[in-house]
Each structure stands twice: as C-alpha cells, then as structure tokens.
Length: 239
Image (cartoon, rainbow, N blue to C red; front, side, top):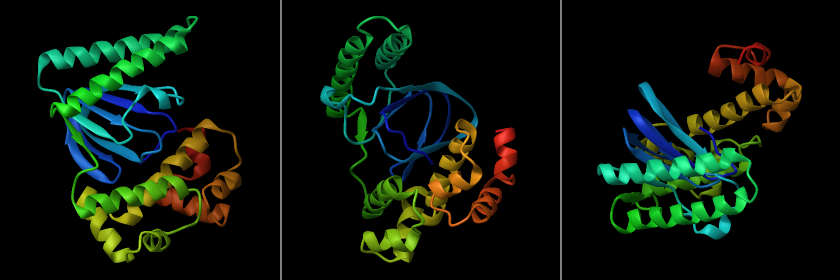
C-alpha cells in the first residue's frame, strides 16, 4: 500500500490482478485505466505477468479539472483503447522532452485528458469510487486517515476512535471492502514507506524508525523483519 503526492494514471494493457484504491478492492485486466488522485492510498497484486504504464503527473495540476476521487475505467471499445493510449503516450513524451514551455503544454494536455475522463464517467464507461456500501465508505475514510498519519505511532484503536467506530467494526468493514483487516492496511502502508526510505535515502536506520513513529530502532527492525524476513540493513544493501 502506498500513496503519492502527485496524481497517477495506471494503464494496464496485459495481464490481470486485483487493485485496492481508497480501501476498496476490485479486479483489473487488460485495457483498464485507473486514475488515482494525490494522497490516496492504493496498491495492486498481479497474477503472473502484467504490462502497462504508470504516468505520474506534475503536482500543481489543481486548475485543470482532474477528478478529486479515483476512477476505474474498463475499456472494451477498441477506439477508446486507442484514444487513451495516444493521450498517455503524448503526455509521457512531453514529460520526458525537457523542451521549453513543456509545463504549459502538459497543463493543456492534462486539461484535455481530464475532460475525456469526465466524459467517460458521464457516458457510463467509468465507475465513481465514491459510491458503494457503508463498508466501502468506512474503509475509504480509514485509508484517508492512514495516509495523513501513518508516520505516527497511532494504532487501529486510535483510528477507529477518530471514525467513531470500534476497532472490531473497522476491521470487519475493511475485510468486506478489500479483503484485508484494518491492521494489515496500516502495516502495509508503513512498510512501503520504510522500504522507500531505506532504498532511496541514506537516513540512518534509527532515523527511519523515528520518521515512521517507531519508539526504537530495535522495534522497527523486528517489525520490518516480520514483514520481509530481512533486516533493514540487509534490505538497504540489496533492495
């Protein structure tokens, strides 16, 4: 489970699996497009080999009208598949070009793409992830809180209290919505950040532990090893 500070588009072109976005798990397959707004917790599993593109858009795209909630499009029509492939390829080329006025060009491209996304939603080709059962809504609220506070030492009980439910009820809702208990969602998010900090920074392990709300480096090392079977120092040497 992870979250990014920028919007991301996942365009799956081959293979299948399950994706969890904002606490709700659904299947995906070829020609599925998933739009994930900034700071929305998500993760996906793969069955065998999966091919696709992850496109990370610039953070300052608030004025182009991108959706504020996740979208999942299952594109059956070959024409729509060609449209989304062309638009993503164009944005990717612009992101990588380094040309003058690239930011402005990308802003306009993203604006056009946001209109395309909204049209698919209006025409019934996209699903609005805000809809769903009470379990879906509770799991979504829980993952939003995790994304805000996972760097602290708060546990499931503290999150449940913020949501005015019992830990048991919260865990039951998460199991219904995404097939994972509340504790696993929290642990997965903290574990991903631990892996990122260990592989992408040179922070001492005790500072990584502190940044994630662990009371000591020893406690962090035990938790990390329980998840991966490896110590933090071993993982850092060979991620």
